[in-house]
Amino acid sequence: MQQILDRLRQLLGASRHAERPASVGLKPYRQRFQRYLQGSGIEIGALHNPMPVDAARAKVRYVDRVPVDGQREHYPELANYTLIEPDIVADADKLPMLADGSEDFVIANHLMEHLPDPIAAMKEWYRVLRPGGILFLGLPDKRLIFDKDRPRTTLAHLIADHRDGGQATHHGHYEEYSRLVHKKTDEDLRRDVADLLARSYSIHFHVWIPEDIKEFLAYLRDDVGLQWKILEHVDSTIDNTGSDEFIFVLQKPDERRGILRGSRFC
Image (cartoon, rainbow, N blue to C red; front, side):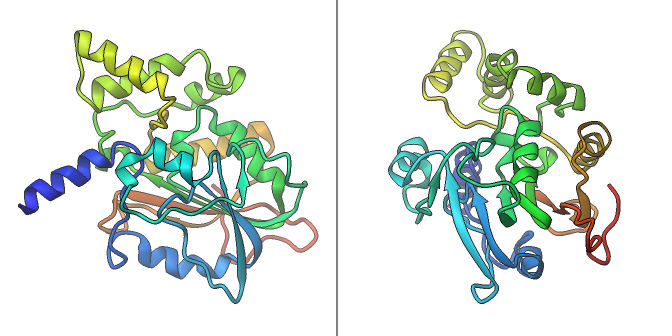
């Protein structure tokens, strides 16, 4: 019976992961990193698994592309979970209702892999953060989840997706996902891709390991002008967390006061 339950959890994870028990994985690190989340900020795409924060130090507004009713329709596999009602309904990379430098922190856990244009998102999050503001970025390690058979997304691919918002690769992402995650072939592949596209299903458009994100951050710093500083990095494999995700805690520089102690260049 336990094997059957484990298999069901794996299959349901093919969209957004079901919540893990609080005692395993990177949850202890999320608790420890609460100290970076102070003031007023946003969490994007929390769904059923919001980041824990100290309510005495941090106020969070939640952002999602659809209200809860739409989330339930899109993610029927989360029917038994409590979902977060968003305070702001907007796309993750388009937040015009938020002024420049208005947020003390942005939380994006298991979100960026779902975005067709991660560079656009990183630009937008940098814009809305105040100088010295924090980006908490949690990502799944493709080697440890259902994406294990998919090729890692290259930096060149991300740059190309930014040129056209991911339009040129849109269909190809769904085809790869269906073929290598759902294991579909031939006519079943065609039908599965058509179904995913018709629902605009939120697949993992991109898949990474920690080294890929380090390269991505270096590109953003050197070529795009987003001077993210790495304050913390937890690697799912090297740090023996027992988790399938890795974390980067990033800071937007504050030239008036300098960067937080303990930071390092990516």
